[in-house]
Length: 317
Image 1 (cartoon, rainbow, N blue to C red):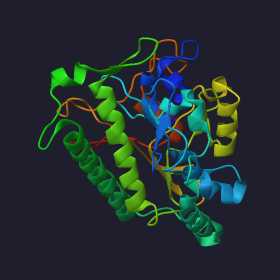
Image 2 (tube, rainbow, N blue to C red; image 1 turned 135 degrees about the vertical axis):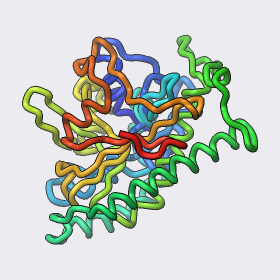
Image 3 (tube, helix red, strand yellow; image 1 turned 90 degrees about the horizontal axis):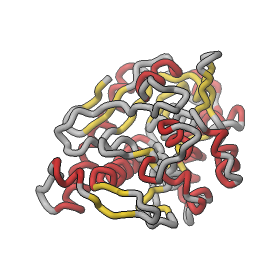
Image 4 (cartoon, helix red, strand yellow; image 1 turned 180 degrees about the vertical axis):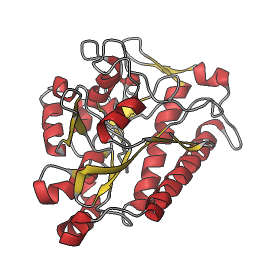
């Protein structure tokens, strides 16, 4: 999954000191995630989240497009608390180029472009009932993803214990440790995003974006979406610093065709073990957003109350 989080990772860990891929947040949504051929053999996922997420806006300004699940980035950082795993691919050059078969997502993009193209759609905001429907579906996806991944990796009816969560799943070249909490979190995040894309992609094509990337200026309080092509160019050229401080929510609900008019922001969280309360990620002390946490910055930037979606807990503010 992506991570503009090399970007995002630096969003949390600070610009001057990039952390290991394990510290990256799975980007944020790439549906149809694919495993990134990371040189360190890390099971990163690479969703083309930007493409789908920003598509609606790009129809009018060529600046954005919704994120696609077959995209190129990966979920952000998953630490012991297994936060979103979106940022991992940012550090993996192989993840920066569209995966084979990405064109399969184009029909969805075409429908999104069509919806965003009409004057009525561009102005449309979702009703309370529609927002509730989205939240319900995302919550179901989180529960299904957690159950499925637990059974696939741990066995039928099994759940990770606190001890298992802390155990090492594998060591990466360079000495970076990937715990079971990290690995399970990334896998669940990927599965939840794929589910969300399948269930909601065609229902709200112009109003729903998966892991779009935003630039936020805390001085001016200005937030603006960044075109996926621009992000990809920076990644290819190694200009990670340009993405420091960018925000990549898992799911953003916005006015049709306008990613800047945000209605709701939601992030998947998969704590390990599952009975731990989900929490917003904390920024590292050398990060410009420190000492705020992820949820506080989302609220400040998007002017909405962000929600966490976690198995067994539902939507939490």
